[in-house]
Length: 193
Image 1 (spheres, rainbow, N blue to C red):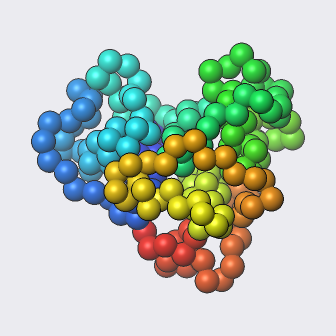
Image 2 (tube, helix red, strand yellow):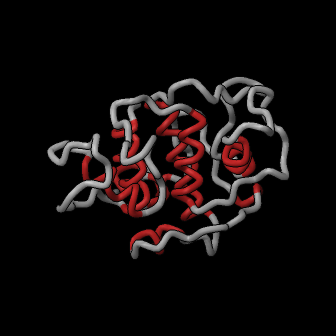
């Protein structure tokens, strides 16, 4: 998926809807007429993205699995974990993405792309994006006291939350496997999208 598509997925997951907006854009390469303009704006406002360069977002570029780890960490307010692993042989602890990937792995938001591998430079597919979103945002409802989305709704993301791995709802690569009450039209975790 592209960076602009990813913005829409994440903002919907965080806020339950795509916002409307007006005014000048934060990024010079995002057209105000783009259907993704407001989602990209909101990603900046929530501190989920800083762009891909000075005043650039690179909306048409594909999102790598490493970049997705950063976006999901920021959206959930998780701390990067450098005290673990390495859990994947293709993500050395010298990688700038290492702590973000380890944080997602410690919460079982990612299972990797193959045994012992994360494939950090591979583009994220729609199925993988769905799995990342389902696992990550199931945390908001599955863990007592982890109500980060309430703060996001007010525009103040929760930062620095560390969860225990036994408190996690996991899914396979593309299918949410929560209880029947959390599936269907209500979306992941039972919240309307």
